[in-house]
Length: 136
Length: 136
DNA sequence: CAGGATCCATTGTGATACTG
DNA sequence: CAGTATCACAATGGATCCTG
Image (cartoon, rainbow over all chains, first blue to last red; front, side, top):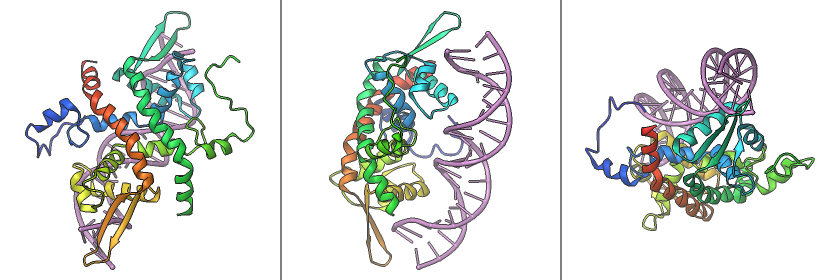
């Protein structure tokens, strides 16, 4: 979050309203940043995996295995972000060695629907789009 | 089978199948890249603006004005990408100076629903998430 | 007007190594 | 096991200038 040193130009206070209600079209509204965060492939995958009824709770290594291609670092980073955002809950079992379990919070679960819709669109139309790209 | 939740990835050439059907969980499947592309704030905004019944077709400068905060370069880049992907149609009016109009293709329109769902989720939950982040 | 080209600062990301 | 730290490099994105 860089401090606005050079350009607090427009908007004297109208952003207050946008901030409160969430307005993608307001420059100052964090909804933009939020959308970029939840719209990523890694978030989509994490939410999708954790939303599977058979695996409501998974350990770090299990998630890693369930998401081929993700790097150690990325998974760690994304999980931390999602935890901070309150979409994922982190449970530590005090054994030796320690075990950590991740599961969706109610808020996280509520994101599952929207993300599924987008993911399914992507999976359904990927072929057509990819083909067009190649020919162009 | 000690790996619960894992998919049956036993095929010899799984990428072929995944490529054809679109599988986010396949490392080689372009669906991942596609999802990252369509999940961005700029794409969400472009699609949303062009989906407005009142403005089915907009010129470059009009789009720019409708999307406060986007840079010249970004808009140009994203429009080109969306055009290549077949989500946006580009119509050039041969006047002096030239006028260029953008509108959604049927494929682009079909993305409007999914994106709206995600955008609305973001706008609705932005407040809670933002508050939690600050306190953490 | 539309948008390409260039420069440059910032950030993202993988690989690797290390710790409790 | 579940991370964190560090490094090197790629990608992003804004600002600015340029052209048909």
